[in-house]
Length: 327
Image (cartoon, rainbow, N blue to C red; front, side):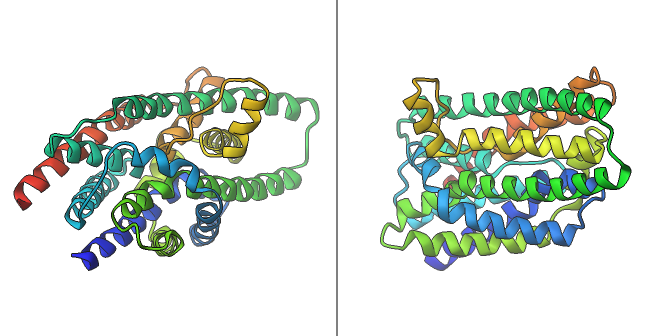
């Protein structure tokens, strides 16, 4: 049973890497500025760094939702998340491990007739709505500023190409770092809850290794959805999308930023795991707003938004049925 639980964690990490490379470098790969192999390599490295240095801030919020006790519990939650995540990937829909894990944990609570910490769940849901809106605002304002700068001080095509290429690479690295800082705790948190005698660094290392392998097996359908199908992006627009995504993720991941805002007596952001896919989509919509929404494929956007609401529900139902059948 313990071996099965360990394999399930590695599969979940692999699935996260395979699906989320589109959220980190999908716009860069979609605009043909960065090769897929290079994107996978850099994503794996910086996810690893972010997980080891900053992932503890969001782990506690996941532990508040449920209190897993046995190996069977962790297997049920993990496998439910894997099935839903892979199902959406098959149809080219950017999915989030955060939503699938949270939905599975709620289904586990319902099955065992336990009280659900609805305050934590509502805090998560509010953050999931706020983060894409914040990314959209940042991208929209930044894109308008970039248009103004380029119009006022034109640059040569070569300089612009180099700026876009290395800018996309750098922002992809930063986005990978924030993914490791924000999302790894979603996987490791439940395992640390059950296997509290294990070293957290060992679990984190194994999960990150699986994520790195998953990045090299990224789903091209999902990359196409983020990179081109939703809204055709130029390389400059893709770089602005990455900036908006990264800044929004930092707001919900960094303990130091929260302490800084508290010192200034300013409103703070909750340190909770955020679906990177939804933040990326929000940033792309912010770019579309600068063009009056022209070119935005609302059919694709509608399918993605519907999946945001259905994913946690589907994960909860699947986990409940899985436990019932297993029993």
